Image (cartoon, rainbow, N blue to C red):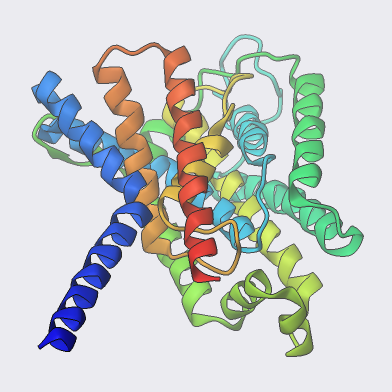
Length: 344
């Protein structure tokens, strides 16, 4: 009887331990959901259809970039150049797709075809990624240092070329007829075409991550670089390709953002990478490496957008929002490290 009671107490303790571990491992999501409940009690319009559709729309605009950064994090790295690459590629998109009759047009040449500009900016982003990946893979530099350097180089190059000018009056075939074209409405809220484009990009990334040798190699290198090398994986090429793919997603994001906002400015892309990194960690992409899912990134970006919109609904200033974002990143990384240590 005593043995049975001891077994019962042990089983109860194990259940409580597992429950506690679950709560700690998912603490960030639980905290965010608690914040959502609080915001909803203060601002009942927060979770109405129009607001949710708006959040989904904004999620779609940031998701491809977050997927690109997620690949770098899976390699136990990061990419601080992402936001400035978005700003640069938005500027390139804008100057080639500005209206022909606008006074003071940045370029005097005719506007290029949309597909050509999209491929161009994705190639520019891919080139930035290739430089990042090459330096990380061949010089054994930490991605933080490499991408911090390229972030500064890109921004300096952008300011030198653009003179920090705002490029507006964009061609309607680029903005309202393509990127921000209304596909259908949910109530009074428009669902724009770039939401579908982002869904396609996400589907392609899912296939790349889960159904290709490249995706398997990416996770293998992130889990254990030396073991991957011994297994025959070309580690150098894998790292370069991961950063190139990430750069291409930044180019796509710049193309969409210029059209969505209707202009390219010096602040476009500022701190985008921080939101994306936070979203990835919230979604379970681990800085320990080799761990991450597309579905987790989608969830993370959506929850991050919930936080940002929620702060707006509560009338919280942008300065305080920075503090909250910083706390989110800190707590999410602490939870990620706890998961790692508990498994050792």
